[in-house]
Image 1 (tube, rainbow, N blue to C red):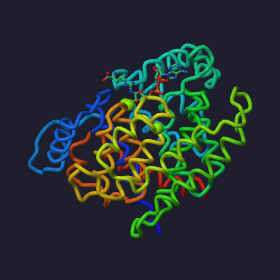
Image 2 (tube, helix red, strand yellow):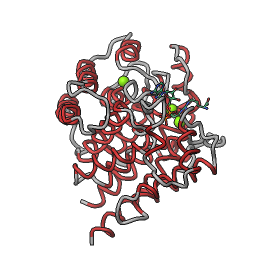
Image 3 (cartoon, rainbow, N blue to C red):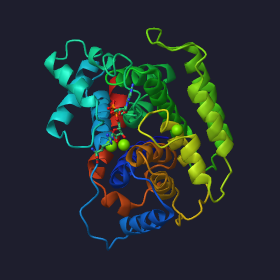
Image 4 (tube, rainbow, N blue to C red):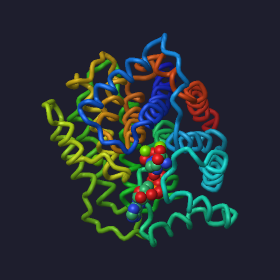
Length: 351
Ligand code: F2R
Ligand code: MG
Ligand code: MG
Ligand code: MG
């Protein structure tokens, strides 16, 4: 039904922006139990209609997500040269949006070579190993939305869109995992209680195929690489647990870092854990609980909250998001329109 899909497209992209905007002030921080009280009040204020303050600003996560939406809406077929140009234009316009420390090098080379071979500069990152950062995963949500009914195309486009900047297997597979998580959330009925075990089992099955297939044979990965499958087993182990020191264990076992490996499974965990109440996070709103919890883990807060927010928003739809929270974040109005454009582009190009 198209009204539901419209709401879910909006919910996903708005969830991504809000996670980014609200998480950004805490990026890189270690969060103490005292800080968690501060974060509780921070969200109380952001939900308060009386609260008048400049809105929270978005970072590279949203800047690059915007470009992915345009890439999907402005051309009938995926055009990676076009996407590379969009990334670079956005970066040149506003380089101080908190980009990854090394990605500027890719943009510089893309520009200097006049976008001749758009996939080459990324391969040269980190002495040829490629970036394993979460930059591919943090911007992948629009691809999951657009291709939600075409799984193979979804994986192919997500892989290539990631490889413009990230060629390390961990970054690519992390982006695919985030993409699949968003797709599964989109296809789930928000009126039914989500089954976390089933959600993870499905992810595990798909990542097994991806990791076993060694989808890119040019990359130096061994076929027995089970990195994300193993991480998903840990995500599964955490389901239903809710004790006092769980947060520390999550940070230790899943991570909260800037690499895809230490952040994508964590974001999925945040989405799943927030299906139920979480100790010391006082809210009845599942979307808020998801991103507040993600931020309370510290580390790469904007990105983990953004990825968790995209998954949760794709599940709940925009009705799940408090309008006051929306109002207090930059670019939410614009992103809502972009979500609508993304949905109508599917119809436009399939005629
Ligand atoms: N960059 C940040 N946050 C830190 C600074 C924020 C701001 N300037 C402030 O201080 O307020 N956040 C953003 O970066 C992450 C996404 O990064 P992306 O796009 O993956 O970039 P990059 O540079 O490719 O990778 C990130 C870093 O990871 C390490 N790394 C990656 N691959 C590596 C490899 N093969 N070997 C060694 N190290 C590798 C490097 O330190 C990279 O710089 C998001 O969090 C976004 O919010
Ligand atoms: Mg960022
Ligand atoms: Mg992790
Ligand atoms: Mg970040």
